[in-house]
Image (cartoon, rainbow, N blue to C red; front, side, top):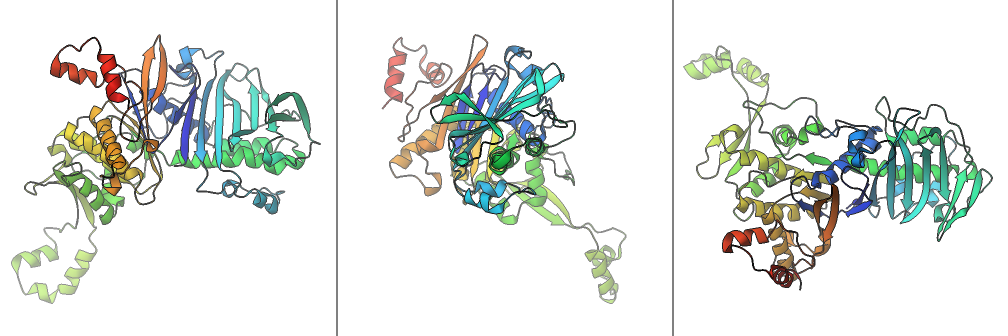
Length: 533
């Protein structure tokens, strides 16, 4: 699981720095407009910053027309764009990769030195802060910091009032710099905090390396390469560039693998054919899932999707997908005429007929086949629930590592199918050696109840192997709005499927009120007994 946490501060309703632990399944619950989507949008914003150096986005590359962030001034907390800074960060687990593979050697680099760093980075965290700069009249990267193995390693600080004189510092006590020569640095003696000793590289007035958004698409990593080339880094040159750039490259790779599936999924139009050019923004509306089914998925992969759709112990949606490949014969062509008339011309012209058929283009038609009577229909001919469900299933099962951000997978879906989505997330997150991670915004009580059930069954050793799950695999967050601010808290789970912390009003007890009328005054104590072991 490469991405293990997301940090957010002063972003929309989030006033203070918070960290969201990302588990194989991370669920966000809360009332409407509480701020659940804020967390998802923070991840989309971070992708824009790292992948395109777009610090002031309205549209985002994965959101299409569906996502409009409105730019920095709209995103900063309480719209205090003149003084507040948005903070975003992501931590990655490096246990499955060697970070040195993400460092591109420069012309003066010594390969043997980088080889000595091989395997030493077990985790990395990249933090950025964004601020408005009046001199440049744009949003700038005010702070960029990298931590390696939980310890700050290097940072780049830019004052909004002096945006062309960034300060570059590294932690001299970090193991990577333990043998660094200090001929090109200034020791900041007052900056000692435990295992941190910030050392500043001599200041440099830079040209052609604006900390603001790029007017042409470029990554944060390419900008860092250009910027560090203008500093006199002395003996620490190679190690400092490695610390600043390699983690950002790996973070970028993970963010670019991300799939964003919005809450309103579209059914493909009648007679649909996917575009020739792949567009990741089509995932936002779910159409990319139909594109994949139509043209990219193998028969085996589509078979797995169908297993989940049709099997009674899974989603039991009542339909399966059928991809038919065919050729169209010209009614006036020789092949069809010969077949229809049964004339001797068929045998006499068999080679010409074969050539005519071979030259015809193979076409594809994607249909839904009803399980009860095998009737084939188009997606527009069935209830909207299927068009909402299919993209969720495809995104979940896609043989691709990375984060899946899914908003309201339960939308327009029957409760019996919603519980099956819980099983889908569990099975997909641990299947086939593929590191799939799910960040899901949901209102579905049925989904979380199924996950709690699988926790209990796992603890009792009565669950199917593909549905085994532990409390460490799940993170449940409650998002609440209070006094114009967004509060986020995690509800702890036990391995036997109980919550150690109380749910807020608006969940489970609402169902009980509909069954039994007004709840007793001691409902809090009763719920405590239910949720706590």
